[in-house]
Length: 236
Image 1: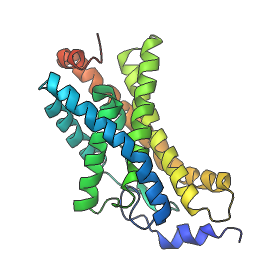
Image 2 (image 1 turned 30 degrees about the horizontal axis):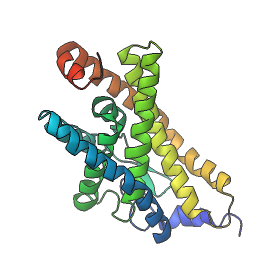
Image 3 (image 1 turned 135 degrees about the vertical axis):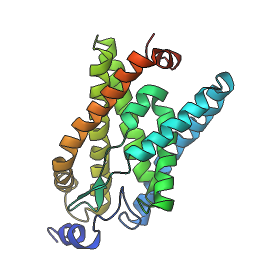
């Protein structure tokens, strides 16, 4: 039936919580996204163990970044039609500082704490939330940062682009997850466009804000604690 998903999106999944809440995705799709997320978690844990053995500074710094991602992503803005909320993520900045793999871990910690204690997001949908925010957001942000730096961009400009595109990549992935799970007989591309369009009014300005935040943080560290950026190999 045409437009069958419209009442589902409008009525049955009000956007009262952050991230994708339990029940937004069917169990089958929730399991698919969990299965896709688990390899990233396993690799990240292995890399953390290896790096911590070489540098005692690293693990406390990763914990500090996890706290920052938790706080940054605790600012919900309800989005009509999608059954979720928009919010800044902080994963672009995290990926610049500790790399995309460790950002997967800090995002997992932030999402788990928010689901357990703040009713933001769900446990069944944690895999989907992690893939969008911790995997897509982190790897896109980090990749853009490296690409622009190798092309001669300043640290500030590269950090801005990383924060901006990390945010947009997160919500593009969330749109794919929602459209795949809720489309029914509706064409996937059509529903994907509708869901992505619902995020535009919030994510256009939020992406710019997150880009500015990332640029400001990296510029501050460059001026005040250049040694941290050097130790983390953000700069030579």
